[in-house]
Amino acid sequence: MNVLVVDGYNIIGAWDELQRLKRTSIGQARDRLIEMLAEYQAYSGMRVIVVFDAYYVKGIETKLKEYQVEIIYTKESETADECIERIVKGLKNVINQVYVATSDYAEQRTIFGRGALRKSARELYIELTDIGREIEAQIEKHQKVQPQIKIPLKQEVLEKFEKWRRGDK
Image (cartoon, rainbow, N blue to C red; front, side, top):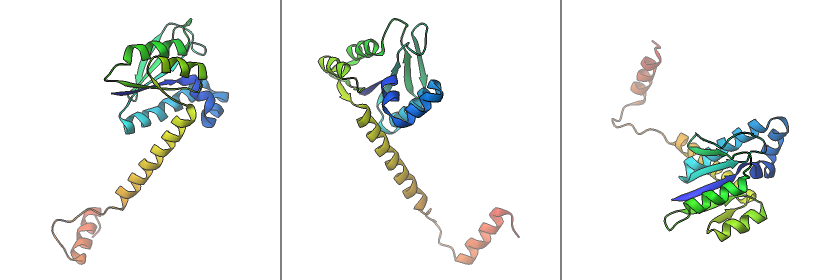
């Protein structure tokens, strides 16, 4: 199974849309990131884990799940990098391929050493944008497909049925 572990605040700091949201509300920026990752998870089928360190959220370690995305808030004394390294160590094996989304160069070097692969914030953003375009194209294609009528009927009969369906006389 492929697993994507995301350094939440690193990504928020790297994407323009999320940076703008962060200026007014860090919570909205987190929520928007989670929504975007949920779409990514639904389309790619990857397990997605997003880690937020306790810099903005004080308290004990918390694990949540929203939209099939696992959300981890680290404990106060733990950084997101330490938590991500622990997750990678626990998940990386011959069955799982782990990717870590961060633009933190030191973290990238560390996770390479643990056998994970990296996705920079830019690479993840491009991948999400491409997925969005593919989804839009599939929706457009689906909308253009006309349902197949199993019994061929004359146009006047179809129009009469349509009037009945709408309640017109």
